Image (cartoon, rainbow over all chains, first blue to last red; front, side):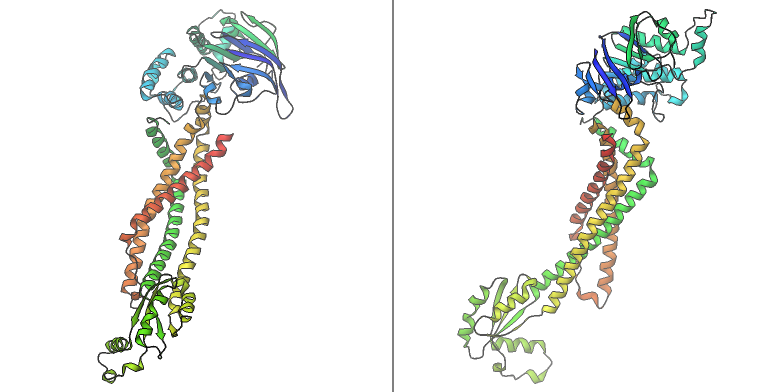
Length: 245
Length: 295
């Protein structure tokens, strides 16, 4: 459960990134955060993960008051989140299995728990045969699925995905826009469907994206942000003009 | 920290060490050099101290009794002399015993055969516990009524005291300087590792790893660098000490100096080197990772 109440965020250089946002995301919801560059989407992610502290207002994430959280409690809060980045952020010198096992070790999981959990998560993202591969041996889509598996492996309550399809082959995405009606799932759609599947298993999912087509096709709650304010919050796809990257 | 993480931390620490081979080599090298220099000066101080103790036990102060005192009066002074602080024993030597002892020193000299004991004085052979207080003790002995002259070989004891004090001062100064240098070098080695693994550390933080968990592999790396440096330094110190001991033993002039056997020292040297190596290694690691974790 995520709660933002009258949150404002002004960086040290005077840039006001968030301008009085209030937002509720309940457990089990799937929410898109959309908006043009500089609208404040990334700042919201940073606020939710405790990377930055709001100038004013209150933020609650899975029972933790992030706006006033201590450095001792921050790791406990982060264990309730799974974060997916646009650039995957996989460790190149570790295999897929090791990329997952090291984040489990980081939260004190036992070797037995690691042995049991990783095959399950890899199967969930369809990479059970790639456990011994290194990231550079995988396609972009596969690497992002490893990143999703890594976000899932510690069984978080909430997944936060920051432009999860931003680094994938854009050809597929543009193909969907063609009037030919080609609806074959491309890599971006695959990733998004995977997140929907994870959401169906009970995990709250928050996706920051600027891919209008994907947002429209998934048909979930969409929160549009511009100039640090929420300009619309509705279900069923993006409404309100074009979304700028 | 859970038990099953020990293996992981050890593996990560070892892997970090090998991933920056040259810097690890430099860190171990500087630790070895520092420990070796520290060890050498400490051992010089230890030997000077041992020589002083040997001198203290062997060096006699002779206190001569006034000729006008009878043997009974002279013997009565013993209690007064032994009451002086720093005096461990005062042994009465009569004129006859002094003559006998003198003659025994020159067994082949016929001209000393028929000496008159009265040319000798009654005397006391006095041993003291602290050679550093020789002058002060001699003054107190001289002040005892009936003592007319005191002979003490202060120059020799003062020489050894100077050697011991200089070695101790140099040793302490070097330890401080070299300790800081070692910590700095190891700290920079670990900083390279942390820089190399910054992405990994960022991910660990993002998934909720505590600072303690992130810190341990680097602490292990520093621990291993320090300990390895200590082990190498120990064996080099042993070889160096043995070589110097042999050199002293075979040198005609230096033969009088008794070098303390390394077999009686190795335990203390090993423990001190290991402790210093570990403190340097772990200290360097913690200093490197501290600032990184504050970001």
